[in-house]
Image: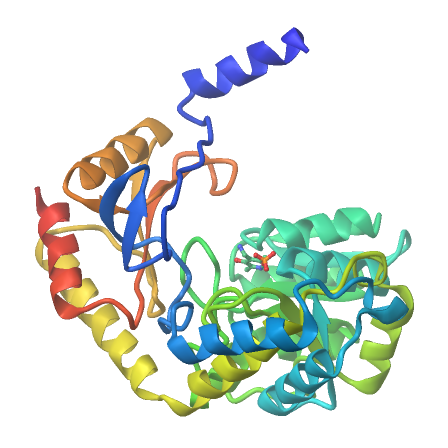
Length: 378
Ligand code: PMP
C-alpha cells in the first residue's frame, strides 16, 4: 500500500498529521502521558466524575454481577435490567417519556438522523455541528443544508426557500464552547413544521438546574425540542450515549436505527456505573459551582494577559491561534512547561482557526488554573 504514503507525507508537511499519545493512568487532571507527568486541560470530564471511587466501585460490582460483556445487541439478548434502569433514570432526568441507550454518541447521531430522514428530505444543520451529526445526514442520503454558525435569521431565510424535515444543532458547540440560539431555533422549527434535534453532549451535567443541560438553561422543554441526544463519556465520566423523547420516537429508533440494532450493547456494568455518576452529578451541585468559578478565574486571568478568548461561558475555553503549525508549537511549549493542551486543527475546525482547546474541570484546583495562566503568559 505504498501509494498511501504521499497522502500521509502531505499531512505531515501541512502540520495536519494526527498522533496519539500514550496515557499511563487516569485522564485528568494529573495525567501521565508518553512517560511524563502532565497537568491536563483537554479532557471532557467536566465534573471530575471519571475517577470517582463510587463510580469505580459500581463498575467493579457491576462486572461481578453481570460479567464484563453484554454478549449481544439489545434486540437479541443484550438488554439488561441495568440498561433499563439507566434508560428510566435518563428519561426522568431529562423530563421525557423515554430514553434509549446507544453505544456511543457518534452512533446515536448516525442512528437518529438516518432513521428520521431519507433521500427526499432536507436536514438543516449548523455549520459547526459535530462531525457525527453531519455524517448522520450523509448516511440518511438526505439533502444536507448547512446554515451559518448560530445564525437563526440565516436559517429563517433558508427555510423560506426549502422545507425542512429536521433541524439539527449542538447545544454547546464542542470546539467553540458557545451555545446555540435554542429558543430561536425552536420557534423556527415549530413554524416550519420541522423536528428540532439538539446534541447536548457538552451541556448535560454542566448547564441548567441540577445539570439538566442547555434546554433547561434556556427554559425549553420537550415540546420545544422533541429530540434530545446526550453523551455519557463527558460530564458523567463514563461512556456511551442516549436519545430522549416521545414513546413514538424511541420505538421508531428501536425499529429502524441501524447503529442501534446492529451493534453489541455496552456492558451492563457500565450502566450501573453511569447510574451512580448521574446521581452524583445531579446531587453534588458544588461541582457545577466550582466549575463556574474556574471558568471565571480562567477568563479573567486570560483577559489580563491579553489572550483572545471566544464568547464561551462553558468549560470549553478555546484559544484561537491561527495556523496548524502555530497551534502545534503552542501546544509543544505548554507541554515543555508540564501542561497538556492539545492543538485542534482543520478539518476538525475551519481553516485558519487552529486552536488550543482548553477544557476546565471541577477536578482542577485554583492552583492548576493559575499554573495554566502563568504558562500561557510566557
Ligand atoms: N456530539 C458531540 C457534540 C461531541 O462532542 C461528541 C464527542 N466528541 C460526540 C457527539 C460523539 O460522542 P461519543 O464520543 O460518545 O461518540
